[in-house]
Length: 170
Picture 1 (cartoon, rainbow, N blue to C red):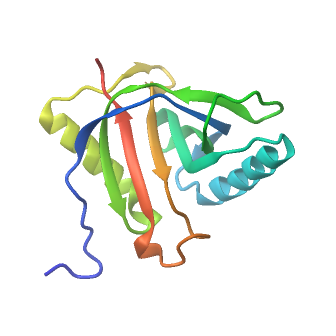
Picture 2: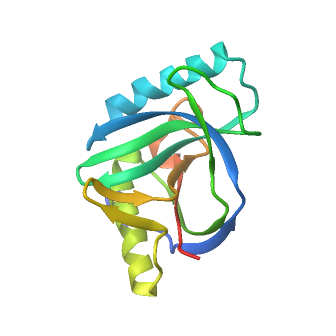
C-alpha cells in the first residue's frame, strides 16, 4: 500500500490534441517560480477582464524555453477563439498534433517529478519532442501544463488536477 508521502504517477499516453487558442503573459523565471506564477496569473485575469475577453477555460503554463533552472513561460488561460489583445497580454494558439500526456492528481509541489516522469517515459518509448536546442536552451513547439481546477476551486491540494502535455515530432 502506498504511503501518503509516496508519489503515484499514472502511466502517460500519446493523444491527438486539436489546436487550442489561449491568452497569456510571458515571463522569464527561475525554479521555484510559484510567487511569480501567482502574481502573473492575477495580472492575466485583470487584463482579460479589462480587455473584455470572454470564454476562458483552463489555466495553462506554456514552457517555451527550458535551460534548468531558468525557464521562459507563458502564464495564461485557454480561450474559445483567437483573441485580439494589447499590452503585455498576448494571444496564441497551441498547435494541433500528437502529444505525450500525463494526468496527475496531487499538489503542485510534485510537478517537477511528474514532468521528469513524462520525459523519461517518452525517452523509453523512443518518442521525440517537437523541440530544438539553441544556445539559450531547449525551445519547445508546445510544452504545456493545463490546470482544469485550482486552489480557488479545490482547497484540498491532493485533489488538484494537472495535465502535462508535450508535443511530439510528426
